[in-house]
Image (tube, rainbow, N blue to C red; front, side, top):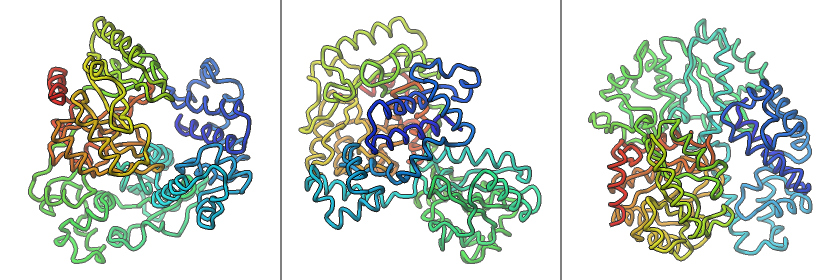
Length: 586
């Protein structure tokens, strides 16, 4: 079991205890353990085996015992007892905007509201209006948040989807009846939110035997294999085209569907080809010379027998389309014209321009963050701690910022192998002004301007606020521009077309924030920005050493958006980067 899964269990325990009204010392220890374990650079299992787990500050005997139990069984009795008592739906209450821990506690203890369905009913029948402290504006926010969560229910962010896929992959690897397998569907396209996990497997023996062996392996692991097709797979062109392909389907993490396609070796890549794209992309493919209709699945499989994906694309008169570009229909015409972009590669990345240290709310010292940046091969690295308005993040006032600038410059002068940049993630205030004076901003190598408060102002005011920051001559990058939190919070009301137009006019760089809960900007807006000639910066927004891995998530978004290395400033040499940053201040 991975650290992220252990951390999630402890975080859920902390949330449930908090909602139940337990004293803070009880849930704080689990919160702390969740944070510590998520930030570990090695697996908790290795530390336990070596006897070093309790050496970590904040990890005591109780946490180690429960971690051992989770590693052995996949859960722990304390967690299961809370779930049995309170229901897993309670965890969703705190995902609702307008509901904090205290309100969730009142909803649970006084009104017996234990999930978002009951919350929706209470909003509809007027029960919530009777609760002191929930004003009209808060009720509107709760209603909008419920609507958003309803639309995204059943999906998981990519990092969580990968963790689940890795768990299932271990079962597949240990099944002797399987010759090879690949992830397909949403996760192969590297979507920010996945609506399920899909695999294609190559059966080394006959398909029916493999199906029987694999079902037993999945059942032995505890999965309930179902004969009911997941609702999001019913009656679409994809499932019709491969209707003769055997499948196994079940659910993980309550309602998250898993689909496994069982294929012969000769049809393996043909099945992978069909199951990878979105329906929109699939419908745009010129499949006429492979099958006359989607109903003729047997002909499709016959025409593509023993062909790899490159061969299939060639038969369709197209160049190979990378999986990340098999979301939108327009990439089909580009492939037919042999005009697809040469996508950015992870190895093209040279630096990170948005990170945090213990100076604000980071969990590692500047020395530790810089040492890690050097270790992973970065050529430049910007320290961009929070500004003074972010009080909960221990934001720096002007005096502390000036001290940090001096500290970064001194460290840069004695550090080999990397260029350190003194920066700041500066809050965009409600009126569009920034936290620091222009005189102080001018002393920074890089300014990332971001919104961290007042999300519920009108679209007109939010748009005006953002454009005001874009017009500031000292701003280089607009951080996580839409403010979305995947699966939890939609983008704030904003006219994104006006924002992108202003960024293009003032040569501002738009961030692709690599946090898997943000991945902001998303591909639909990155594509628009690219058309306007906007440059992008892929940043980790790392608050700890393990979060450096977020670069990969950001690169996924860039590739899904059709970006090349010239579109992303993190691929530039330090000399070219400095000149580009100067250009944003004209």
